[in-house]
Image (cartoon, rainbow, N blue to C red; front, side):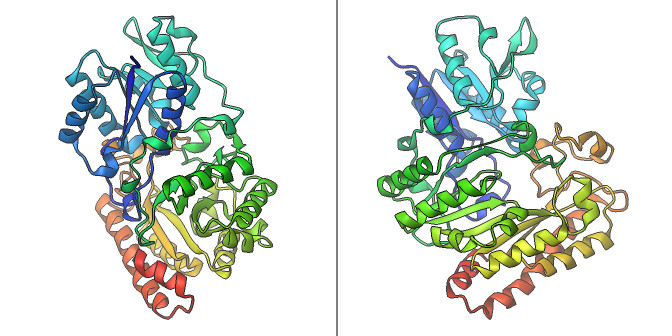
Length: 450
């Protein structure tokens, strides 16, 4: 009889990401595909999307009765992720528990202090998890499994890192395990929301970002033909018509990206694409942005992060202010939705600097602006510099919404209210603009989003 592994999303909510839609747990789709290939029976339980709490999770674990319980975590979700593993152990101490994700990858010693964690999968998970499970089933030496951390004689140890997967096109997926009726993009009525990863990694070195450290500033892309085949499968097989591209930097290679756009235009699948990329790539692609729109791209997030060059340089955002403004202008010119974010709450922040950011964000004039509270990931390059200003240690608050850093000249409450005021001021003005907008699709989209 096949051993069961139950993948459970942490039941964490902070109100930002879930406002627009219910997002497919893509990581588990890949991990489930990998372990199924190795002869295990995977189950995906998206407790977060279902709005299930610990009580419901406990019942579901009892119902499935798995041999393994696995979860994933970023810093803000790690507390709830660890509680999920505890629920598994409480039901059956014989269950083997596994956790992966960005936070456990870097903070594995801290995570392994929790008695309910058996193994940490570090780095890219597909090959590592598969090998770990097979090794456990055969009672073989775990030291030979690259990319894991565990307790050995009571001490946290980490094995040699596993090299990144070279052939992303060869990875197996388990789309049949997704309960598709749960996934919708609220902005487009009657939609079914899917996700397709076209690449992994980012070669830049922004000091506040976790992704460049996780991927060692590397980038790998899937073949355009392979991506379009998967999109076609999800469209025809499961009725997906809106796709999130969750990549950190999908447009890294212009040649590859243009080939993907050309294939999607040729297929004419009637889909919508939501994506993020870098401002300089939008400026680079000014002559082919019409292909973005014709291929189905309707919404582009670009990480501007700051409105003054000094702050951009501080966080090593390798872009200038003018490039961000030009990118937003070009996206608007081609009838696509723009979204960006501005980081607030730096140690040098003042009421005057917040007001300046708000004023300049209105000059940028994206369709959607997010005013985010700088979060000091405990493994980020900026952490040591920010540590003297950290006043909140509860990881649940490290969500870019709740301020955890106290600026020298502002209180935590003051920076919190300043962020709220930025949202209020920006969107009151934006609403007036939308009412007089001539583009019917964009007007409907933005009003629905509001």
